Length: 454
Image 1 (tube, rainbow, N blue to C red):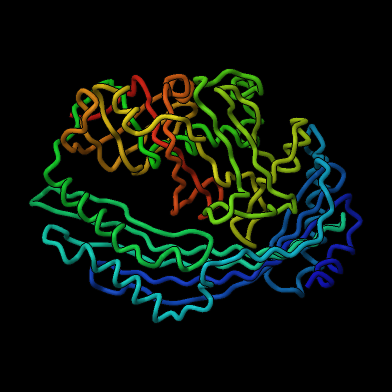
Image 2: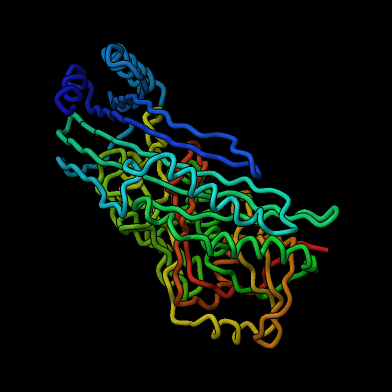
């Protein structure tokens, strides 16, 4: 394969070119209530060529090898035209020439598990909530995505890497009269099929929460001190902070570049945030990004101070900062863009009981349920919460929405737990879909959070 890829890009007179070829295999099984809605697999493949010429960069995707010469010519022409219509020429930061094949170690290869067995496991987990009175329906699916990737560049790099993702996840819906509650449940990862086995307890737990929510009290609106569980804290880290650590999202905003200068004191001294795609067995694990750059841990926030950000080769050169290996494509249809890998708040020293005592009175908020950001402001939903009085957990409450400003919230994180958890079901829709985008955190204590409610 590499001989073929080298042959294709060798025909350009561009300053730089690279090519990715990928075989993508997807398997999907979905249930809507008791009904099997979908089952099947498909395999597709294709190429992406990128060309850097005279300071202009362009990419072209194609699926037929016979179209390679035409795609290369088109990318080259487009890059030349772009170079005449931009103020500043594009440069790529230098990176090592790499020749490597990396096939991750799997705890049971899903390619060796029959689709019958995958169906029965999905059916089993889907059936757990449906046994309970009060559960009106479910929407549970199995998803398996296998990407066999090949990368070659005119600099001489040749990299083969597989990315394998499996998960069973979806919604459990409870109903009592006109009151309807939804709870998300799911298991998954990037280290093989075994992670999906023996997870009945997870679906039982989430079923119990869905039923308990029918008896829960709506939250009263106000400003609270809160503990966020790892799911909520992880989503805050990804959505509110993480995207501003992606260099391409701030490079054309003078306001954000001013606020996100390296060395800026953004958060409380207890707060440390890192993005580390090199962590084996985690959802966001990979060895090389889609520019052929070796991934590395990138410290973003240290004791509240901004010390790093995520880069492509282009933005690393433009900012004059180190490469991080965070330029990722959804698949062969796309040129890569800057994406998070495993982003998380690093653990502190407090136990959960310590945090409860320190909180005193407030809310314990659990499990993210969607949300949005608008500049430096955010609104996130939570699946449920508990009242906390005198450091003791009380009754369950529902209909939780938290609202805040990124920078004020970073300063108001006053204590960090010692119990780091990274998510098993990820995803990010920035421009392209990245199902392996992973976030996490320990429990954290946050002061003065605005809660919407009755």
